[in-house]
Length: 239
Image (cartoon, rainbow, N blue to C red):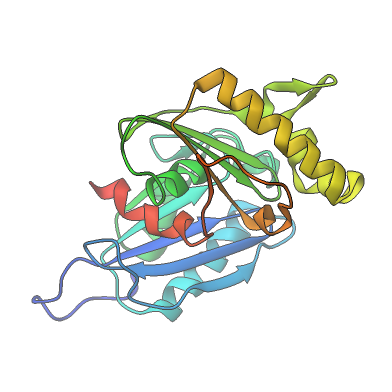
């Protein structure tokens, strides 16, 4: 089903940026420079979050945003050549799903898909030195950049962190609800120290919906970034 046909050849290339999250799916139109052309649309992530249900939400968001020429998608899992390899906080049916090809059929536009933390990093980094991205939401995402170049497929969330548990098990949304904000913040402080020792980063960027619960002093080289970075970074998938 082709949608949003552009009729004015003088119009510049417009990108529909989509961010698929465990709790919400967001969409925003970007111009060629990656600047917003619309307000952000958001719909709750369907339950169960199957490919069919999520794609239906994206199609509705796309229709509401108006004409666009191409699509960028941030996905909460490992992505290889438009195929979703893992999706720990969505439905198991995402494993091995051809997301880029499916969305192209539905939206009638070329589609590129990347890990959501990678996309958020593109929207936040300065492009100098070693920069690490951590996203705190339903789960935990991570990305690593060296002089602006992405080191692909970094899945720090499922790496052992402390007390026999992974980073996601200690810092994901379920951990926040179970442990409470004080203990969760203490764990976050320990995670920041561990990442600093591991990567010797120049800057650590922390994004995601649960950044609003951060209540500890952060080092000077640790920055909280707004959620919209997960959409603004979508323009980088076409560079």
